[in-house]
Amino acid sequence: MPRTFSVLVLAAGRATRFKSEHSKVLHRLAGKPLGEYVLRAALAAQPERTAIIVGHEAEAVQEALARPGVSFIQQIQQLGTGHAVRIARGQLEKWPSPTVIVLVGDVPLLRPQTLRDLVDAHLRERAAVTILTTRVEDPTGYGRVVRAPAKGPKGATRTKRSAASSSSASSSGLVRAIVEEKVATPAERRIQEISSGILCFSRPKLLARLDQLSNQNAQREYLLTDLVEIFHREGERVAAFEVLDSREVLGVNDRVELAEVEKILRRRKAEALMRAGVTLVDPEITYVDEDVEVGPDAILEPGVILAGKTRVGRGARLGPWATIVDSELADRVTVRQSSLIIGCQVAEDAVIGPFAHLRDGAVIESEARIGNFVEVKKSRVGRRTKALHLTYLGDATLEENVNVGAGTVTCNYDGEHKHPTTIERGVFIGSGSMLVAPVIIGRGSYVAAGSTITEDVPPGSLALGRARQVNKEGWVEERVRRHEDESQPVASSSNPPEDEPSGVLEMEPTKKRSEPDLEVRELGSVTVIEILSGLTKPGVAKQLSQAIRDAVNSHRAQVVVNLARVTLLDSAAVGELVAAVSAAKRDGGVVKLSDLSAETLHILEAANLHHFLEIFPHEADAVASFGPPAA
Image (tube, rainbow, N blue to C red; front, side, top):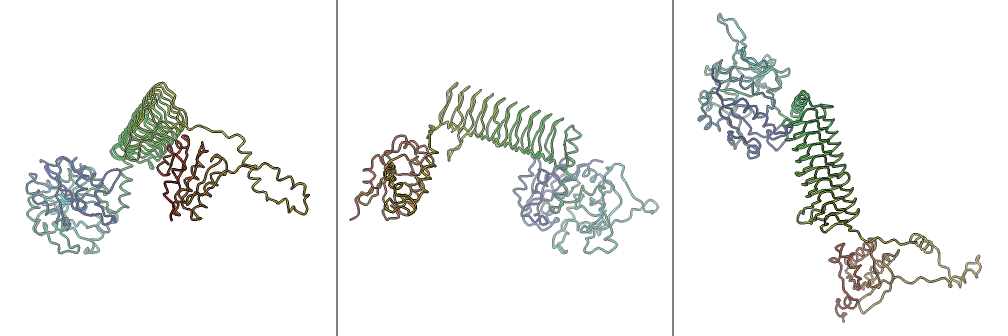
């Protein structure tokens, strides 16, 4: 008997019991949309035609389930399963196959063989419709299948089982009705055989009776299962085909059931991998998506997640809680604990992690090593190249045998565009280096630790990009002494303490007086503050900051700071200066700088502060820029 049939998948509704705004068939299950499993089963059964009814989130569903040869029919108003099939009438009338299976879109454990067996049973029974049924211990909430007894040649009741049917299903008699629980009698409620919602129709008889459906029922919808009663009333044969494993045909109705089915699918995948030669140390907490491939002798330690279209080679070892998504790992790759790899390629014998992050198409070549807290983004890391600690490699090309020291960063983003970094063969990058792209580090060269590299480095060179180090000898002792002096009370020689000899205090004026650090002058409405000592001298930067604030608070809002004697700025001094200028601006003041040495100006330019501060070559220019004093 030829088995030719077509499939119509119902996927138009929203996930009401999921408490979700999204279509049920789009919810993820073991790495794929829920509806993907039903469609794969349907296509594997080899139907002549396949169509999917879409409605809620139609475009997203169509994009997720698109396949060559699969057509989509939109149900704009979702008025029930019977209404969905009515919408598809135009397609059904054109299909050549005499048999049509109507599938629900939420039965991810359905097997292709069950669909083929359903069609075979339907054809043997010469039925108008054959219901795919199953038995459950608790049938609460499901429609009960009420069978008519099958009669033997002499009228005796008998049960038919087909030798051609699979071991997981049976065919046994005709159906008198599907009774919903709300209207079922106590005896009918005790029936454990339920309808799965999957129906196999004679296409001509379906088209002949489809318009007889009505929405005059409790749901106020056009229900496809009402055709069972219509066919029975019209004297047509209604058969049942029972699936022995109820999990295969029970729909996923909420998130609890979704999680239960996910456990089943993941356990099946884990068992298949282990039988194929893969070691899963703890299958219960190892998560491998359906389409993932893993080679023999690979070891997956607890917590490993392999998602999407990931491929893992022979002999690879993935440490605890490693996550690999849509990536290819070649033979003997080691991924250590808690590393994340997304959309990347890792060649044979490479070592990744622990706590590494590869993303956006990174390519790691053979025997390379990417260590702890290293991020590689959209970069190629060459053979036997090492980046072992606290490093960011973005938009970079590293050739073979490169050593990247701890704390290295390829500074690839200028605020608007990404730029490349190229590190040629055999380069040594010292720890804490900043490579400001675009830049090329030539073959065999060295970059000194702590360097900021902004220009290309020729092959075989040593590149240093550090600020000059300054050691102030005796600074700590001087700081302690000043602190002690400031904490002592100042006594007057004319009023000595009663209990202290006056001779001691008379010696005090002979102490060497320290020179002032600042000079404050007033030129008309402008206050000029001149630095008389270095700004790196302890306390001078704070004195300058306070002097600027005092001037502004005294309603002298125009301030010029003369830096003619300043030859060096450190970060503390720059911070105090910027803070004081910012505070003055907030209070309505204006601060301008003058007479900067080349070294001081260079420091401010390197910090990009020359755009923030107003700088003049001479004090007179700065004062004049305020304009004539108000009359």
